[in-house]
Amino acid sequence: MAKVFGRRLILLAAGRTADGGGGFRRGWDARGGLWAEVRMRSGGLAHDEFGRAPRLRLRITTHGLPVGHPMRPAPGDRLQDGARLFEVEAVHDGERRHLVILASEVPDGEGAR
Image (cartoon, rainbow, N blue to C red; front, top):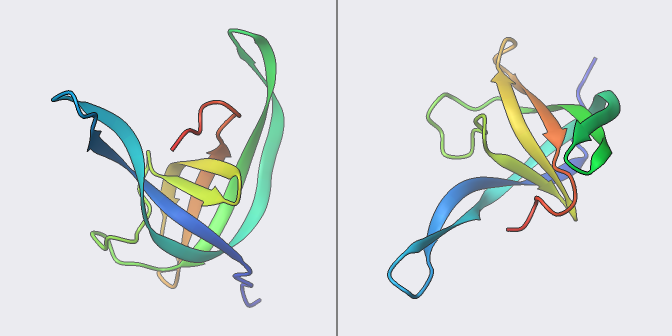
């Protein structure tokens, strides 16, 4: 069955920006866009310091990219879909034509760019 890559996600990588006082601040740098198919993997409630928060896990499929390519997602990167952010947990390229990305949604308040 053919994959339908109907969602454009922005790949964000952790970066450092000068804070103007001689130090640095962590931020997220956009590397570019990826067309992908996004499917829900699981969902539930996770416990955090404020009680229980919804947790959504996703399976994202995109075109295959070789290891070392600057547009290939890696664990720790983020994918942005409008106002939603997903943290990349793992990347698998078993089919070679496609990358399978396992990700979880970043809760509100943790996604500042």
